[in-house]
Length: 364
Image (cartoon, rainbow, N blue to C red):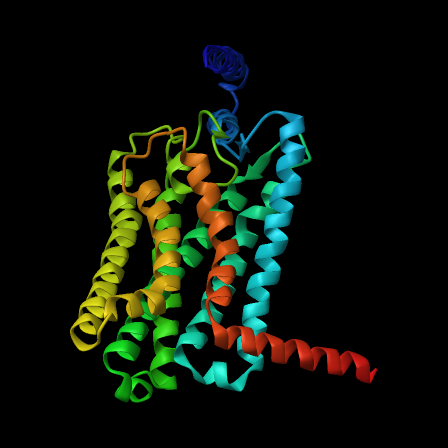
């Protein structure tokens, strides 16, 4: 900073000397006023350009991702491990999406219609962070541009919030199916299902665009190292060179309360299901747990990490990276296993799809 000020001071004095000598020579000429104004404008233009260059040089144009480890041997092992996880995520969720779309019976069922959208969200969510992480494992410089960082934040929160809303809708679907089975198809008709899914996507868009608007207004002129393997709001906000207390409060009230409210609504919904079945049937609690166990497991896997990350002050903890891996990698990988291993209809539809695919291949 001292060198920059010294540079501007010397340059300004030099221009003043030029202006003084210029005015002595030209003061007797009739065009001295015009030339004097030109000299002043030129000097101010040079100073303005220098200030703009200094301001641009001080802005952060990219971020350095510290990743999960700095050891090359461990990074190679993590690359192979997460590559296996990523292939499992893509194949598992893609299989569910294709199975639901190919089976007319599953597609007409509201539960499987929502499940297809949930698998599509998990597939896209893993593509936001995992490919970049895999590439960083194989290179030394783990950087991401500012625009790329904003894109990660946008899609991460867009897909994450949409998934939370969709899980809340799926809880309502289970409530209607178990507590009001005679009117289930009447209440959960195709038009209502499409409207609910559309509302989930719109809610995710509004949430994510709010996050990006708050982040894009922050000045970044100091450190640029993110202690994570992807860009997220808590890590990025800590690098801002201004007081971010108000922004943090807005972020916590947006992301943290959103996760907590949806989680509480889900717990209340499943508690009502348990109480309803317990009063109607013998051993109803065990039946309810058997019916809703997969949904409760997925809800816990998704909401507990989100509440931990966003519903607290934005400070570093040693387990933050582990929780981030669990939220962005492990949960999308486990969802297909949870839904397919406990579901006879999905297994039957997958066997039909496999048989149909084999028949098509043999026909060639």
